[in-house]
Length: 170
Image 1: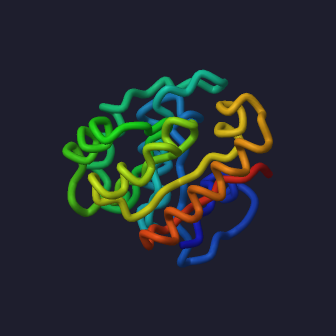
Image 2: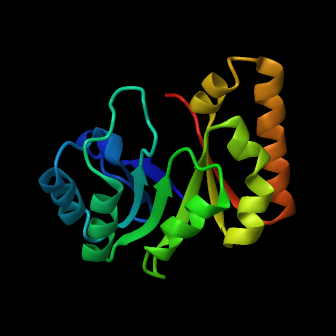
């Protein structure tokens, strides 16, 4: 999967087979979100909802807004939610999605890392997104813990044949 931020569209043409990631943290209105989705009607969309985000920008739109939007736009094929740590949350989110949308838990905390195998096994997860910067902050910038977490995530994903999407700084 070639996953590319929608912001790059301002500067270049994107490859035809790319999946466009729209991070709802940066979206201020439903109209703005709808406009982006209409503009990309012919592309697969990876919609990213910043649940529990406290750093700027904090989300203006709700998780319910995301669900409503997913049902309006058939080109949304992936839906990621931040700060996933437990199976109950995953199962709740997945129950509200059409079966045409792949749920992608974003792992950003030490708790999420420790519960990863359980999340994958109990919730039928196919993709994981790892936000390294947020994980680094969550583990109090402890390099040893941080790199051990990354290695553990990679090993679990490899063992269970899960596609790992790793976010890295620009």
